[in-house]
Image (cartoon, rainbow, N blue to C red; front, side):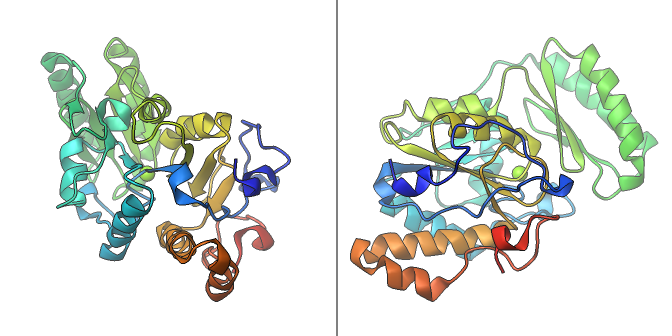
Length: 304
Ligand SMILES: [Mg+2]
């Protein structure tokens, strides 16, 4: 185990901490080295791609994609995307590369051999739920329904005044469709994901894949759906990284997707420089964290 991982007193803690409540906040993540001992898992929206007004407007910056490719080469392929988006959308957003992935919060899964496993979800419940959410969106102008083949989401980032009403209505629908779907609230979105799908189990499944097996997990995510993957990562003594503010189980925190990209760049430079040059690399990069502060996280923990 990398000694840097043993510096936190709460290394086995699964406690949710809330920087906003003035409790001790997560620390910036440490450098990870050597890279071939780690497996990397990244959420997409809000983690690799900045949050956008609508799902179709989100994009992974080309520089971040280049970093992912460098990371893939540096750690012999142990890099996966773990997202609520479909596999098709993940592939489109990361084209032309086809990553190992967990789509739809883990309902879809593609390991290092490139075979995509998909869930069995009956067509009619998906269609009925879609119709119900379209009716709900019609009553709340500005909200947006997204059909994701095996799941359906309603977004209200462009209609925040309807948040309370939409949350209440989706709670009722969750009870009606409980046999097939699980409610997954997110940032200005409520999603109905296939029952049983969760990112934590998807991450554990990757660790049985021959390319990922035996490695220490590094998981970065920004939303409630990432918390179960943080829990698994913590249990395995890995590095869990929350992107942005909010209560979290993650042990480490970065302020934005841009800060994550800078941390990755520093990690890669250090790994490619070799162990004897790492002090110089660290000095050149200074802090890996974002100057845009995260909630009320203490400045000395988030860096400048
Ligand atoms: Mg996200």
